Image (cartoon, rainbow, N blue to C red; front, top):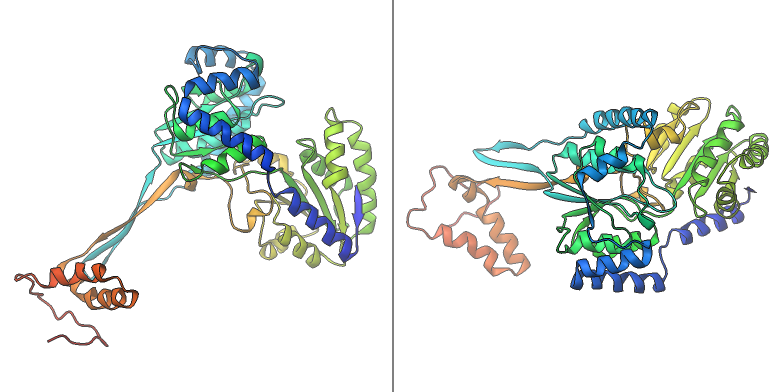
Length: 443
């Protein structure tokens, strides 16, 4: 892993990270657009065609039956199922605290408030292929269930008919009955536009490859989406009290995901930097996915040396990492200075993997610097808010002149007329003086 110290080298690396997160190529966008349009027009026919072409799977039924789900879930080892149950319980307990409730208040007899309702129907994409993630099922479905979403549909690719028992175990654990064996951009199109088999959803959540991410970006507007997820990233801020074995292990925990993952250490200790470099080489050799992890570390990994921890925090805030670990002598003291991060892991006993699987907070996090303005997936992503207004006649009159004045200033005559037509009613006789201080009195 390269060690960077000069402003020029650090600036060049940060530019590389920005370019890495810029998205897919025009060629990918062209292919995805064609797939989406095909699915929109031809429905199931297009889905079956792409499932055969991309997943080498010929099937007459896109939907998996509850019996199939149960059958494959029973192939999962008991210890894995037990672990998933613990994780699910903790995830649900955490997200229960995110619930929002409708509220209202009285303003001189007028009612103002906000109505909270769950989305009616949500679609979740669960990756398949090289790797399948039961934790993704838990993290995407449980917040929707807590929010009160009535209909939850899952799309799970099954290349060559292969069905991951752990994913099925997670689905069975959450009692999800609507599951489709379809993946890729075509699955996103099906959920966004609807087909003869798959009913259109209101929102699509879940990670996927570049084709899935591009498809989600393109269907936004027809449906809502959670986020445009890019390659994962971890950033560790550490001082000379950090254990280099821990630091190296945590950096590699993300690097093994994908060649495009970025793993970064920022430290004020050259001694720690050198020790972590040696540990990375040693631990890399032990990984089954060492080729993937090595490419990630070599291409998008770095150790940045700063003069102090404050400078390290400043660089971290500019990167706005998906996962931020703080391994310093007093990590809690640094929390007020952290402005941008998807999830913050404080102290040596809080590795990022805890958050991935069992801690409770959601592991679907903003990537590519988007933590500057977006948040982890949560219950709030599965609700909609409606403003509530109920005015009395006197309350209406109290604001009538204000509304007419602003409408006139904006040149919107019809807006003002909604006030004057009411004022013109013969029965319009307010029972209290409507004029507040500063208003021009009408004759």
